[in-house]
Structure formats: C-alpha cells, structure tokens
Length: 333
Image (cartoon, rainbow, N blue to C red; front, side, top):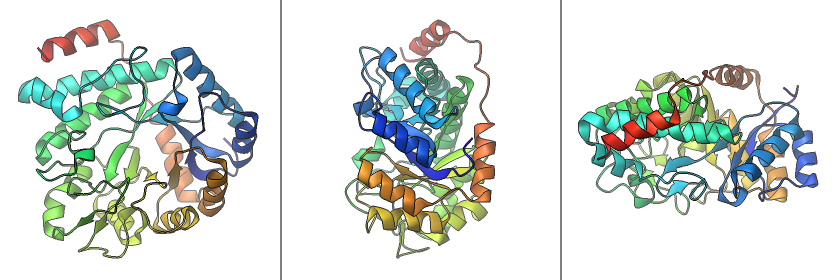
C-alpha cells in the first residue's frame, strides 16, 4: 500500500476511467473506491473499470457498491439478478426462513460482485424499522424488533463474507428513528438515551465484531443536539466506547444534504470527530480535490483498523450459485 494514504473512499464519473482520474488517484492514494449505476454497463466493462482503478493506485484496493436489493441496487438486469426490497423478502420468507433466505441472497450478491472485481458491499443495514421510519429507509431494513434485525444482519454479513466480499454495516449508531430522508434533509431523533441503548444502539453492539462500518447523518438530540453523528465527537466516541465498534468507520456520502457546511468543512469535521475515512461518491474532480485535502491522511489508529479490515476477507465457500439459488427459491415459495 501507498505510504501516505488519503483518508478517503472515492468515486469516478463514468463507466471508463479517464487518464486524468487515474493520475489523480495515483497521486492521492485513496483507501478505496465506490461504484454507482453511472459506472455500470456490462460485466466486461465493470471488470475493466475495477482493474483500471486498482492499476491506478498500484494495489488491490477495495471497491465497494451499494447492493442491498430493491430500490438500492446498482447492478441490475439484464446482467445481474433483481432482488426484492429486504423487508419484503423477510416477510415473504416468514420467521423460519427469513435469516437463511437473506444469507443465501447475500451470498449470491457477493458472488456476482467478486466476478467483476467488486469486493465490498455496503450491507447489512442494521437499522430498526418503525411505523414512521422514512420510506427512503424503511423497506431497506430487516425488521421492527432488535432480535430480528440482529439475526438477519448477522446472516447478511455472513453471506457477503462467505462469498469472499467485505460487508459494511450501516448506518451507525442507528437510522431507524429518522423520519426525514438524509439525502435531502437532516433528521433529528428525540428518543431518550435509555430507549436508544435498548434498541438502535444495542443492535450495533451485537454486531460490533464486524470490521467495516458506516456512520449515520442524523442528530441524536439527547446526546449531541448540535451535530449529526457523522460530525459529532460525542457520537463517534459512543460508537467506539459504548457500542464497542473498533472496525474501520467510514462516513456515509459527504455530498448528502443532511450535512451542514461546505464539503471541505464536512470532511474536516468528520475526521476531527473520529471517522477513519470519508466517503465522497459523485466523482466530481473539483469536489474530490477539496475533500482529499480536508480529509488528510490516515492516522495510526485508522491505518491499523484498515489493515485488520483488509485482513478479514474469507475464502469463498464451496456452495455453488446453482445450489444457493435453488434453496433460496424454495424458501420464498
């Protein structure tokens, strides 16, 4: 790896890497990359792109994607499988089959990823759904009680991992009480700390051994009324010390409108709050330059977490895609 690695995960603009982008990535040495629908056309094209991204930085940098299924799915038909929204699949499989069905689905998604050079999926989504959870999130969740959410989140993480892909759990320390879409507005949570300790925070505590995590852009008024969790030293300290997560913590996308201030301010504040890495997704060159400068380099603690996270990759399980798909279809009938 590059000796002075930038504390960033970055996107690129299109389906092919430009010379300018390659030169920029070679210079700044991000921790990794993230792909979106604009970067995806065919399997061969994605394989070329992931190869070119890694060639630019000179090592096997992790490349992530959001492939939850349902609305949040960057790889789509006809080249990749289409999936139900997670909450819909959980309901269809029923209490006895939900966790296994989500394991198999996650394993199949991971196998699709690995075949085209993607080795990180931003899942599980360990947020607990409520009746008034904003629709942008609700059907991406796995259930409305902590036991269901933890059980299925663990199954999703295991399925992704058994495919040889890194799972990234989100949105720490819990987004289920958000009634606004953080892509556009800043949600506020007024629940007491005691309630949060028994619900949202407890779900992530049960999953704290996972190696990759993503922060939430929402304000917990009873803990830090002045800053969303991504930018809040108090909230990041809670994630580290009370939830006990010591994996690599990346921000959710810095471009989301929930966050106040300029991109430069957001990147600097997220790093000062204790996030290891900042995530900038849209691939706009001028924005990336500003974010990279403000984010600075990995500190010693973040470098150690990155090393552990990269070392957590499993060998691919021997179950065939055909067997997994057959069992999944039986569970969903």
